Amino acid sequence: MAETVPGLLREIATVGTDPTRGGYSRPVWSDAELTLREWFVDHAGRRGLDVETDRNGIIWAWWNPTGAPLVDGVVTGSHLDSVPGGGAFDGPLGVASALAAVDRLRARGVRPSRPLGLAVFPEEEGSRFGIACLGSRLLAGSIAPERAAALTDPDGVSFAEAAARHGLDPHHIGPDRQVLDRIGVFLELHVEQGRGLIDLGRPVAIGTSILGHGRWRLTVTGEGNHAGTTLMTDRHDPMVAAGAIITAVRDVAAAVPDARATVGRVAPVPGGTNVIASTVHIWLDVRHPSDAVTADVVRTIHERAQDIAAAEGCAVDLVEESLSPTAHFDAALRDRLSGVLPDAPLLATGAGHDAGVLSTHLPTGMLFVRNPTGVSHAPGEHVEDVDADAGADALADALRDLLGDPA
Image (cartoon, rainbow, N blue to C red; front, side, top):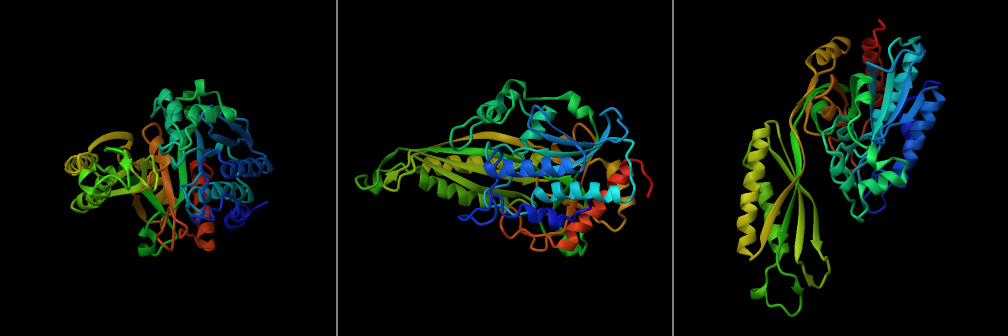
């Protein structure tokens, strides 16, 4: 049963389509994401893999024909959740490629003496509870369990409540040394989220690093009032301040080489058409190769925001929601991958991944597959069928080497 990556992805092509935004909306534990989890478990079962879900909601499927202890395994995988209106490949490509890589290894007669694991991490995008890579952060102890449990989605449902609804004990989420010890090395395949491979003319690249990045929430507070009875001169409108702050975010980042700053979400309160808002929440994403520069950019944005808010008779507060320092993938693993895949160029990325979170605890690496549009987190994201299968071939070659089975 050797399946192609495009064939696997076609099986889930209708799951979670978003008729309003276009693309796919698959937040963690939504009907769509649960369907995808069931799809993965079914495929893992067909391949005779041992499947379990850990206390943080991560699905593990193990190929361990010798019955070796589940320690120091070779693990690959990705995620199945998406951003709102995201593309078809961000996450599922890595999961489908992991399944296809197992098929390829079996077809080559590989019988691993070291456990090979496939992992599906929940809430990688942070599109429901606001913190990216939440499953891997909990596993690695990069977020306090109490903080994670208290996170709420846009409907006010806490992570603890949602976890309990889906079979997890919210009192037991958090660092799991036993599970971490099962991973000797983690290799994540992902669609490239930029133009690097287009410009290099190659189908697959080896990851070198992830830009440091974080998410902050700016809360602009003014005076709620009636849209028809309040004179323009009497207003303290946080929406006006918010608009100017968004422009300032762009201007501040544009003045710093290699900086990226984005406002992708704005929420006015109470949000009525004929109401002057009392509060506006602005979510800010900032990234730069230097963590110190990231901090400087955020500090400058906050200072500009305070001046803008004050000019409108408003106030602004800044709260850090998540922060990931620049992650450099394991150099020895990178060099080993280059030896197995000599035609694959080295490529850094500006996008966060579970492999980056785990990199401070164990050797991790990444493979990127060409995206001919260069667009990601949007419906225009794409991978050609031939490149998808080239990625699975590369992943199988790398896993075979890591498992110690000579080509």
